[in-house]
Length: 182
Image (spheres, rainbow, N blue to C red):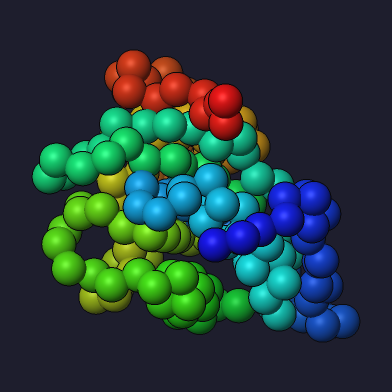
């Protein structure tokens, strides 16, 4: 995959239609196959160019120890989105972007080219067969909380009422290291 990184630095931003309600969403991005840094940059670019989404902020990348079966370390990041989509439509959009990158679900917590998880959507609490908000493992995963605390430290997780900064201080962050492209 050949990529010009200079073109990825300033992605095009799509504004929501006039009069539409903009919601705030937080997502996690991860990759541990192929060229993870390139994949995450391209995924962020695609998110920024998707109608109904506004890429408001993105965290730095972190190298993290994989959870699950033996596999390479991950690169993880988080992003804040403004969106006119419903939570279910946003999830469908994220799954479609994963598929665009060749994501095939073979093994739970297995290696992947791209993983996009919807973490938070406004202060919505939702338990639906295909979507739980906030993300059910959000409060226990340092590889999500560390990058999320970079861009949304004061966002309150709606179930616990705790801020992301408070939550990150309650988990073991030893497996989460700032990424350096060396």
